[in-house]
Length: 238
Image (cartoon, rainbow, N blue to C red; front, side, top):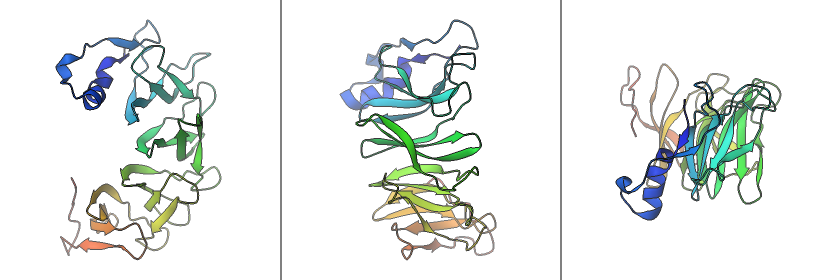
C-alpha cells in the first residue's frame, strides 16, 4: 500500500528550517484505505510557498476521484483533494507541476485533451490557463521548467509541431516563443536550463538535435552551437 508519509516533506522541511533530514520523524500523514490497492500513490511533488502539491489517486470506486491534484501542509487534516478536474472516477493525471510566483502551473487531461492549468492558492481557483490547441485535441504541454519569472515548456497548437513556449502565468502571456522548425514538424525542445540571461535547451528535431538558447523572444532564440555538424549531438544534462 502506498501512503503519503512525512518522507515526502523531508527535503522541503530541511530547506525551510535549515535542519538535517535525520532530525525529522517518519510518520504516515494520510491513509486513504486499508487494502493493498488503496494507496494514493503521490507523485509529481511541488512546493509552492511551503505547501506541497502533488498528483494522487484515492481510487476508482464509486465516490472516488481517480488521479487528481492534491495538496498537503504536512498534517493529515491539511492533506486533501484540491479539485476533481476530470469529474468522477476518471483521472486528469496532473503532470509537470511547477511553481511560478506563488502559483502552481501544471498540465492535466480531460477526455483526450491535455492542456495547461493554473492553480492560484490565494484565490483558491484551479482552471485552464490556456487551451493551447482548441477543441478536443491535446496541446500536450510538457517539460515545464521555471526560470526567472516564466515557465518554459514545449507544446503544439495543431498548426505547428511541438515547439518552444513560455508563460508568465497569464493567458495573454502564454505564447509560442519560436517555430524552430517551420510548419507542422516539431523541434521537440527539452532540458531547459537558465544560465545568465539565457535559457539553454536541447532542440532542432529528431534528425538534428543540438544546443539552442533563448532570451524569451523570437529574435533571441537561435542555435547556440552545432556540436555535431553531421547529426545529433545528444547534448543534455544542462
